[in-house]
Image (cartoon, rainbow, N blue to C red):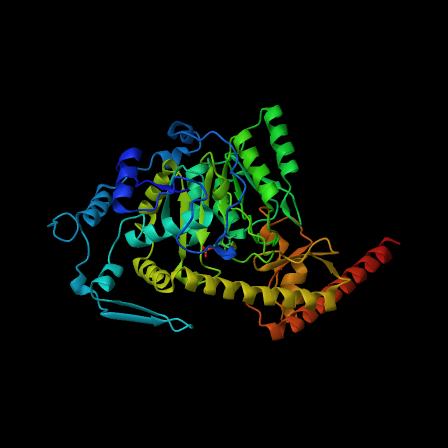
Length: 485
Ligand SMILES: Cc1ncc(COP(=O)(O)O)c(C=O)c1O
């Protein structure tokens, strides 16, 4: 269930009524039958009920909003842009400082997909695609994404809305600004997305890394960490940043039981969940797994969606979903930062999604997953063949990476010297740790862009690099022993 609520304007009940009048989908019963056939690729909810939890109130959200974010104010001209979209074309406006469409140089844009579908923008549609739009996003795309999110996750019936962002990286940046005070604690997976750490650094937070096994974060450890902090009277973290499916770099897919337990802990220890899920469609387990959004009975989830990995990162096609009290703040941030995401990219995305329909989107997603799965399998086979006794790994259940542990203290020299000299590019484990200066025995291997026929060469080169490094380490040890004698 997904109750939409427009920002800064109507009261929730008035808005609800307006949505009904405008024909927005409002599911009043969880699990209501849908007008199209749900495929597993579109199922991110559980057949079991969502956890019982007390919804947060607007007052409750105040304690999560950072001092800086609380100071953000809507720009009047942006509100007028929003109003002018609602007023329609007949209104005379001396208000908006928009560019005249007469200066736009393009008259026609035509794109063709590999499957033969066409995206054509011309006339009024193209003019709109080259113009400013409300901060929330191109209105028809916003409606489309609301519906998509509602259909895919069927979240419990609380007010929520979406904000189109320029990639989920931008959503991350804004979410951290929204929630984090300088120096405050934040929960993360022990090894996590390097782009998130880049956002965190200027805040100099206390990063609490929760260890994972090959199924992801271990909720019992999370619980003991939180309990200990509480007992010691330490500042409690306000949010947990999680990549629940196909985690970058560990490739884990958090099972439903663990998600439920983590959600329960969020309610018990009063933190929010920042769910960053760009690999949701790249889940190789073939088990539909419920998103945190789908379990969110209390309004504790800020969810970030991205089509970068399955459509095109260049389109920056992404959106955030959150309760209004939080989404309003994200929107104010986006307004101050860039006014709105790229209109042209939004218009292309909208028309692509409309042209494809759900069936076409499913075909695209299945194709992307099959391609990545084949590459994962090829690298798994090549690693087994060449590196079996040199490294340790679990075959990733989702995403684009193998997280490989070597029998060395630190991989840094190996990555930047030995591997580089032999023509192999690697990412050292440090990139996935908050503290990049500490030694790491891990490598992150990305298989997403490597052709099937090159996998074997890559694994063979890696084996060669590891052996060279081991021989060097042996030589160094022998030298040290000799000098100590
Ligand atoms: C976990 C995670 N979050 C966010 C991003 C950024 O995605 P986007 O292209 O939507 O900004 C990435 C990109 O690699 C990622 O791995």
